[in-house]
Length: 629
Image (cartoon, rainbow, N blue to C red; front, side):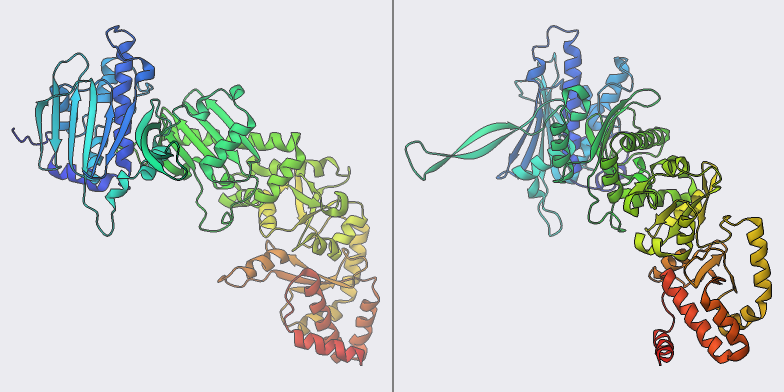
């Protein structure tokens, strides 16, 4: 029997395909099953116009047959088979695709459910096998052929006996090594796992004969082995069924089985999109965040299928970071795959699908916010921080997409602990109100107790309470909402004073200039300036900031590990109506040393009020004790 060399491509090309194109050796089974499915599809297509095809659709199948003693794994189909010429073309010429040729010859177009495109998947078998034997008989032929190869050295073709139409591929597995255990591909559990992972939705049954134990009739504890044939795949993808055929329980069970989450999802999104790109998607929003969701170890992505065959376990490019909590899958007939079918080419189709999915997720969340507020707030508690990161990241590129999904605690809610949207806040604004006011801190209690927040509330304005670390960064990126500026109660001019009040305050500041210069000298550059404030009501003192960096942003940034310490442009503000201010004025002329102590004490007090660390707790304690004495 003549040894033939592979045509059209070099041995090095075959070697690269075997060792470099595929990342995981287990892929070979997916490729062989996909090829078998294509062969059956071709014969089924022939049966539509040829009454001579005796096999009915429900008789088509793919069989797996492991043999541990012989160390062989056989994949068999009852599809269209191959002639000698087709064996030469499909297996002797690397990168020749019989499936692609079949589509072209029968004018099926690229959307036909034929999986193979490149003609290289078959050669992945050599990643696990030292010898591959193909026995095949084409439909309409009385002659069967055997093709054998040990890889790059070439192949042989001869006639053989085969009673039925179809193809049988036998892999003689490589010997086990310390790193690779090829024997695992002969284990029932492993074959089940791989079929479930990659080929669960192949349209024809994938069957395997398995051995089971049963009790011997008439005995108490004696068992005997018996064999039965089991179907390993479910065949019909859930996402290709009509939505009205499915129940919530079926959707939830699929989620549990596929994504290993024992908690029911909060909601599911089942869609089919047709147009520029056609795809089915089944997405889930979990009820709870995974334990590692807010860590660098979390890996986002959707499962990606092409015609029911899984291509990628997690395709990160299908989800933007702000929706990284979504789990699910996409199945498309239009994807441009690379030759290994392991990775997707970054092309226009992928971008279109991703953009469409983003819009669908956003619309579904907006609908949930409107129709089921309690469930949306449950979602928000789990994943709201991620949406706020989405507003902040990319220099606010997604702020318009996400701004109406944001929730904040607010003084306008019962007990200040409820949630409000920005739209709801604006709907409750007074006619004369120019800004959306917010206070930032570690908790609602901290925000509520800020001196500036007290004044804003007492003037009848609602205050948002920003308690997450990312909140103020996101709000700064928003800038405004519904043409209303978002303003921190602890920063800048709040716009709450009349022109007369502003003039009177400026006059008081000018009159106390000597006092403020002395206090600023005592604080040695810790504050940019000292001045009287119109934002204080019952408190004697507070800290505010000027510039883009607020006091709470300073606190958050300085808590980040390894970061360079930053400081906002601090302003020490005094309440002109508080008795402490009169004491300070008196000490300016009577006892400047005590004035210095009081200045330091007031500054430390202001730090505590703002939730910032006290610079010298020992000195603060000593000053308090001195006052008590």
